[in-house]
Length: 135
Image 1 (cartoon, rainbow, N blue to C red):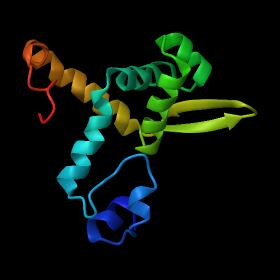
Image 2: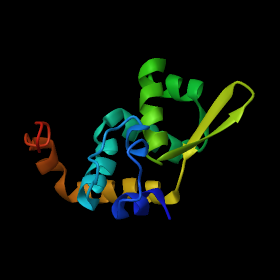
Image 3: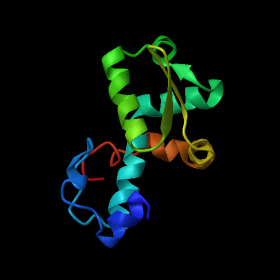
Image 4: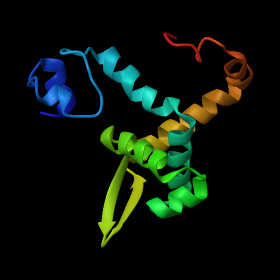
């Protein structure tokens, strides 16, 4: 059974629910998990990382740092989130860690977001509710 299926059926031990960097309710609902999954994309830096990996393929942390002009610690936190949630995968070559998009559906999701934005960009740009907590 997958981790997701285990969570939905309640087959996850209490310790399993606190091992990761995020805290979920003891029995998260499917909407809880989907909302949390999409929250990963709510940070522009993480979207920029994914777009860059989609465009250029596999890149090292150093290459990502240089291309995105982000501090290494900041980038590392974003990469950790993306990796933990299944958006990216890594490969180690000696001391260098390379990142790539984990699944073609991630690229499709970004493309779908851009396509939907084309029809709604003006409204999204003007929306104040999204920037407030609780929206």
